[in-house]
Image 1 (cartoon, helix red, strand yellow):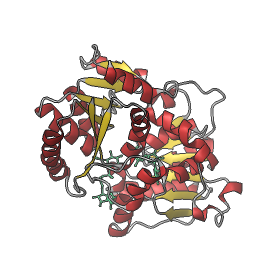
Image 2 (spheres, rainbow, N blue to C red; image 1 turned 90 degrees about the vertical axis):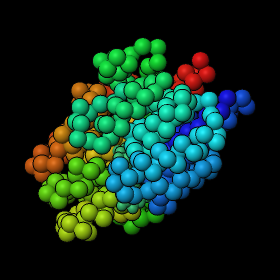
Image 3 (cartoon, rainbow, N blue to C red; image 1 turned 30 degrees about the vertical axis):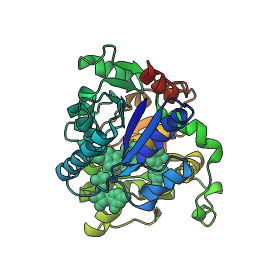
Image 4 (cartoon, rainbow, N blue to C red; image 1 turned 120 degrees about the horizontal axis):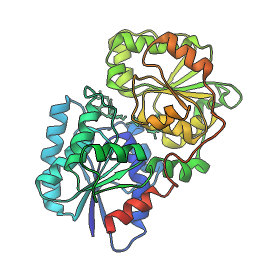
Length: 352
Ligand code: UD1
Ligand code: UDP
């Protein structure tokens, strides 16, 4: 069997690493990896291939930057050429980025079956680019691998709950189990004495926050007002907006470059709490037993809010300060994201 995997953005490298590892153990499956180029800085792309031992991409499309339509369109055109040449039995896509949608669309138009890992997530906010990517990808796919029961229910509600959908758990949970022993401190952690201090680990990159100067300034102000040092590995998008929109970095907020996955896991394991608008980082906070303050009005990972691990604050500085001060890990942790064998279940679903 020949699988063709389409990846392009940071979280997809982490998700695909777990599935690629189990696939590589099989002699009867060949995986062709296509990198769209959506993320291209060394610390947004190459570092994950190195740290997570992901095979080098067989094809690199070099499509990064630009508007949503231009980026997705250029990927679609290039992917069609690659898929026509490779003629795979199945195309595998992950998550909800423009690379995901382009991969699913290119395959379905060539009548190649598509499998979507992390299917069924919904924020019910149709202004989010990711929401349209998810909905369209799910409806174009032949196999839907859902990470949670909530995602399964969402698929059923859209008429997609038939034989093509199955709950497998979350491949990011698998990754957190596999790599937690390999976690390592960033070079600068010693200078900042992070292993002996309480700190907030924060990330901000979601378009609704990064592109809105009022929200972005409010978030930074709210985080700083809680009185704990804030470590902010900053996505290049947000770094660019801070410079061009003249946003002030308050005292106590330490901006650093994006870190590798092994360093990120170390920071998640050592912080007091996480504040983020990232999808993946919300869950990783829980995997490492840390409460999370989510800098959005809604989340796809509702079970964490219901279980008391996650508080939604939007960009309101007072709400952020109050949530940070009140944050604590609930006494009980449940298995919300499967048994740590999601990648094996994805492979079993494909083979079946
Ligand atoms: C994308 C995904 C988002 C995901 C995020 C993960 C879409 C619509 N969005 O958002 O769902 O949560 O990736 O991080 O697909 N840039 C660089 N270097 C890079 C990558 C990006 O400088 O290596 C800058 C460029 O100015 C680029 C901007 O960041 O235009 C935005 O990048 P893009 O991939 O369009 O969106 P993300 O915000 O990264
Ligand atoms: N991540 C990382 N380095 C960073 C920030 C995030 O390795 O500086 C990892 C994080 O641990 C998680 C993934 O990137 O596994 C989340 O990606 P991101 O927040 O970019 O996207 P989202 O999950 O919101 O789509």
